[in-house]
Structures are given as C-alpha cells and as structure tokens.
Length: 144
Image (cartoon, rainbow, N blue to C red; front, side):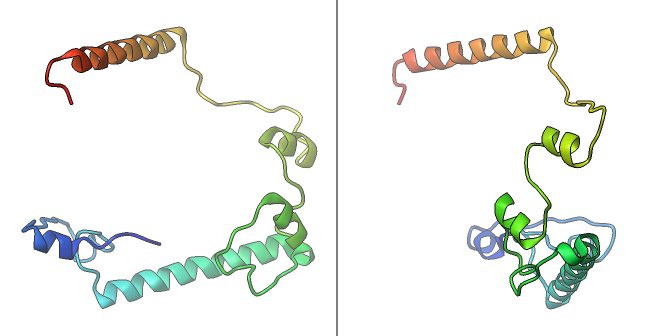
C-alpha cells in the first residue's frame, strides 16, 4: 500500500485540512492527514492478514504444482513464462485461449459494452469541436 504524505507541504503553504467523518478512524490512511502510529500498525496488520490469506489460497489451489522459493510470496511479480515454471500458472495465453483450451468452455459470451452509432458519432463530433477550438485559440493574438 502506498501513498503520499502532504501534511508538511500543506503546513508550508498554509493549507488547512478539513476532514469530516462519522467515526474516529474513518480518515485512516488519508494522505492529507498525519498517519498515527496506531493507524500505521492497524494498516500493516491488515495487509499482513490479507497477504497470509493470499498465500494460503495459492498454496491450497496450486498444491504440488507450486515450486515455492523465498521470493514466491515476497511481492515480486513474474511474466507468464516464469509463472508457469514456478507452478503459479499452468499455461498462459489470451482470455479466449484460456477459456477454450484450459477451462474447456463451450460457449463464450463477450459482455464487453460496445458503442452504438450515436455514441461513435458524438465522440467524433466532440473531437472535431475540440480541434476547432484549439485552432481558434492558437490563432488568437497574444497566444503563447
């Protein structure tokens, strides 16, 4: 989990944080508020718990296929070829390939939303208006 702490910058520029919550811990991890030791410990414990749950599920799911090393659950990541060598995956390929060849799905339904004609025209029309506006601004005296 990452983030930025802006409290010093805010103080330097006189920016006041106004965070209103309905619980003393609702603002936990807010990047514009100081991170207390209590909140840091809570977040770390929560992350450790999620990490341990992940390790358990992967070990149970992969079983003897998993070739565990000290790096396996260290937070590193691997490409498909490396994941197969490590036993984290059986094969790699496109979503369609995996669905058809690995899962053996007979019927694959693509639920991807497709733009209709009106939406495509509106995008093109909007882009044309935007391009025209840019040209008009660039043609104004004193631009730049």
